[in-house]
Length: 340
Image (cartoon, rainbow, N blue to C red):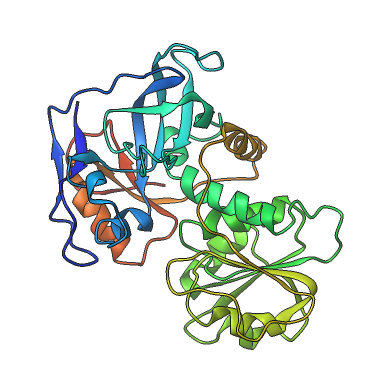
């Protein structure tokens, strides 16, 4: 099979010289409780290119030509012994981010075939095509679990205000939609003026142009219930906490220096999100239900063939992506295509 593999660490962030596509990688075999997925689509998440230069990654996971990639959407090709829920031909999606002591980083999505535990694979929403479904699992699971930790769904609350610090990126797009679906009456996010119409169409009520003002300049003290810092920059908590009402929550994604406020506020809970848990298909089923109800859509700005994975990584690394950069595993090598 064709597969994008990593043979070593990059010398610095944005160095993708150790990523290559092999034409003759062996197709993996599903073990007990596992399924083999014929992959139709995947996507690029920032964590994938960050890991390529991370000093925290165990060398064993990099230097044995490991197939890369978290997000997967495709069709069940084979089921291992002990599998009872999924069958050959089922259209599915998953985040291959499950880890264990023996397999610190699972991965494997950037290939024509991928193995996953049946317990982590969900049935693909019928309202999403493979490219759309392949862009969502990691980002949408992250948002889903973050909002759950922050008390969602909030259907019993009135006039609830949710702030999402970055609106147009991979986690921002689904987060806006989930906040709306789960009862927020006001959804505030930061984004450029050129993206405001899109973000409002997804459910944002207020889009603050970060080129002109910060979120916290626009939000009075004690005016917000939930702040989801999906950007996770250093100092955000100190700036955000004054705007949060007593009983509210500040939750942040780690990775860019984000941390709890050094000036905590009585009655405001601060939560370090930690890592996404991709091990439970039930979470994907909950997301599928939202999608099938028309409450969760995907935005895929560009899609690349697997052979053009380095171009896809460069596009994501450039930092100006709206939604996600996709990988069309069924597509033959070519330049990128804009998806409508």
